[in-house]
Length: 93
Image (cartoon, rainbow, N blue to C red; front, side, top):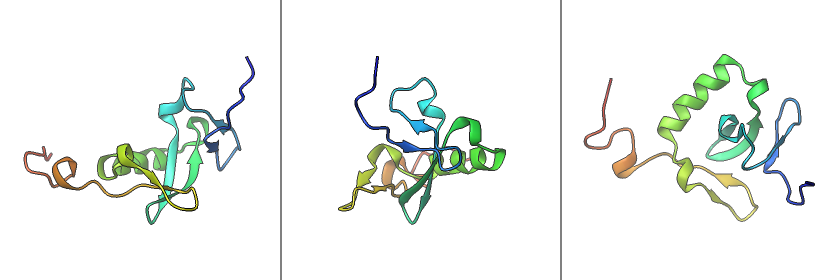
């Protein structure tokens, strides 16, 4: 079946298309700068460092409430309040 929708973006390294709902969609990493999504990296192009950075960002950034600015860029803000890393009751290792 041919896709009629546009991909969410492309891997900044190999240019592979990122499709929402793809089998490996949850393994793609986004790279942000000042809260704006600036690059996507597919699972095949990720290095150990990229993967580690993604783990840290997932723990500290609020991807669930990402928004788009007036230019259509995705903005991701730090976690705050009850869901943030310093929240009361948060487990610390």
